[in-house]
Image 1 (cartoon, one colour):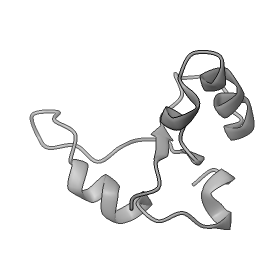
Image 2 (cartoon, helix red, strand yellow):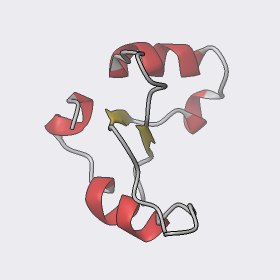
Image 3 (cartoon, one colour):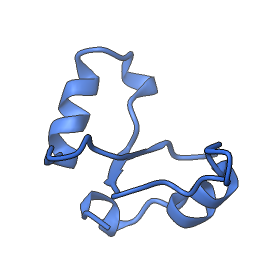
Image 4 (cartoon, one colour):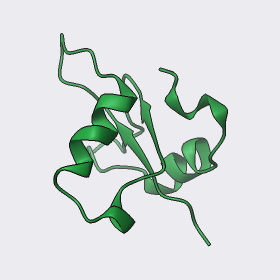
Length: 72
């Protein structure tokens, strides 16, 4: 099965810690819905019209490994 991972872009000037994001989600989501890891990125790939390129996100960030908690 798939292992959920959150890929997040912080607002300008905001520093996000992946562990804090996971802790925050724990207060809002059912345990089975909480991602196993969080990746903080500067931007997500989008089309010229601004739509998210989901396939690229899955390809780039889709596997779970020890680097999941590092900022890319």
